[in-house]
Amino acid sequence: MSALDSVISALGAAVTANPKDAALRLHLASVLVDAGQPAAALDHYVAVLALDPVNLAALKGAATAAEKSNDAVRAVAYRKLHASLAGETQAVPVTVAPTVLPPVAPAQPPRLRVIQGGVPSASNEEPEEEEVEEDRVPGVTLADVGGLTEVKRRLDMAFLAPMRNPEVRKLYAKKLKGGMLMYGPPGCGKTYIARALAGELRAKFMSIELSDVLDMYLGESERKLHELFENARRNSPTVLFFDEIDALGQKRAQQRQSAGRNIVNQLLSEMDGVGHANEGVFILGATNHPWDVDAALRRSGRFDRVLLVLPPDQPAREAILTKHLSDKPVADVDVAVIAKQTAHFSGADLAHLCESATELAMEDALKSGTARPIAMADFKKALKDVRPTTRQWFELAKNYAMFANEGGMYDDLLAYIKEHKL
Image (tube, rainbow, N blue to C red; front, side, top):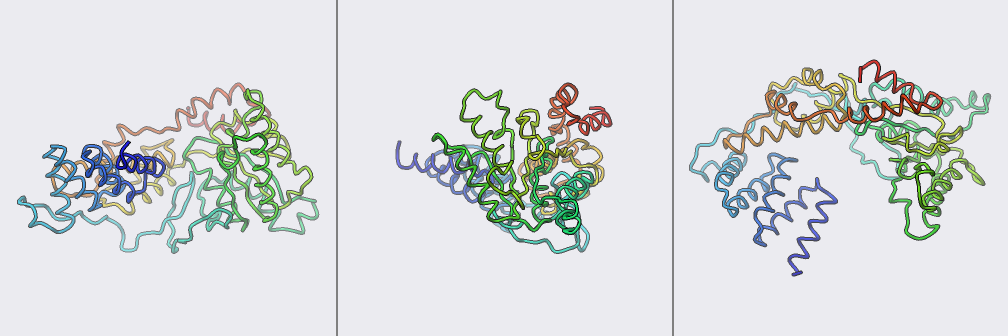
């Protein structure tokens, strides 16, 4: 392998790890062009334009890559659009339409905060630009979470009310500790809710993933898990958040190797606080597959509270769409109408819908050489291809809810399935 091939391979791996890093993709694309691989470079320029349709560097690079790939039609279209956006109308012999129309919005558009399903809602307050870092207090609270009334009520009674009322807590001998398992379809904001709870408690937030625990050496995984809990105890109040807890706390009967069972045993011991005090340590878990979580983890004193996090309702869907279109050129797009047509869409599904509509508008602009805003017709066309991914989850979850409803764990899920005829 030549030195240039090694560079391309390394950049390719970096892009795979950070697919939304536009600068990294542009660098890789330029290297590919220099290496005589314009077709591969063009794919990366197009990927950047999908994230940022008016990226001038990507448009210019795409034109060069298309030209070197003998795709004259696309090369001309990219150059015309670049010239239109950059104001270089004299650089091309074709008359180019005016630049992209500005978004149709009120004189003072509402600020956006986060609501049901991990999505933004309207707020006229200045947004906090503080970036949440590990072990820092998040800058969001449950007030930023719209909808999910029952979820917030359960969180309030389990964690918040005892902290706000120390005398009542003392009277009832309520400990400031506990665990809660959140489950539901993917893309509905379980992680955001965990951060909001930490912000409400003014507690540090530690997000634990599988890679933070697993180790190839015998006993190291258990030691790492113990150290994570020790760190949380030293810095209480702390919210320990285990994302995809089913991967770490999988049913021991399903694990063929003792290493996995030992990790579950260690997790059980740490949650019990054996030999340690877990006062001020709040343990949250999130999973899309609660039926794969070891039953012992759901025992009283561990993840003894279970919360169902559902897809956003219609007002929340309107807010998601508003947020994802807030920085894009749009005209005559009725988010209320789209929200009515997107029942059971998760926040992630709605983000994908907005990106699909954006790509359709950009494709039309590239073909015609005329930059235009995203229109309602783009959404109507995108809705033919984009479907709610939550339906697949509900189809799978329905079987478990009906035939493995131990202790009424899935009663809320069954009620939702019945109400919405899923």
